[in-house]
Length: 206
Image (tube, rainbow, N blue to C red; front, side):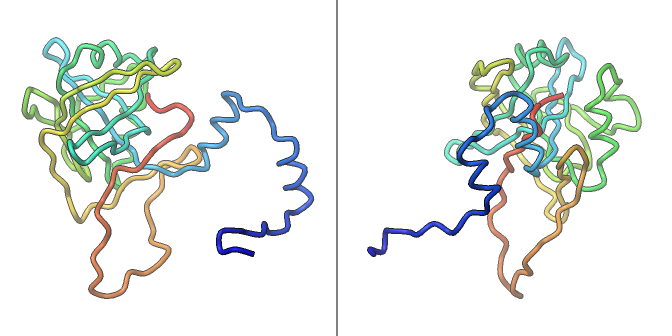
């Protein structure tokens, strides 16, 4: 047997039956699959006719380091889509552990998301910036790509800052969680370069 050949492990009877006749993919199957995927929780903000607009997204990902590009998905039925459809600059916020209340607020339809207790200020290009997040960025929208009932928004980072001590807020199986390392890092070893996690819950935006 060559080094390239591999012998498959023995499958259980249940696995054999499942692989032999896999269920078809549909919207519910997509949701079930991605409930198994834990990811970061983010808020996207913009200024629209002089007023702040924002929504919770669970689809923020890093796309490219050169140039620094990110993307996220927005439902075409989202109340924030008209603002994002016209916005040139946006704010991207990775929420920190302990910001569950803020996340819930930005996920609620019809909520007054920028009134107290939300703490924010206008940043570059009048983009609303939220305080206390694990990281924030101001970005310029470069592409809007239609994808089913969503729009994929690609944006280039212009400014960014990070709270190195902040732990990320995670979303998994319909609930918020905190990150716990499963393998201890040896003393003196530096952590890997941070990346924006792929996030999905079967929806992608609020």
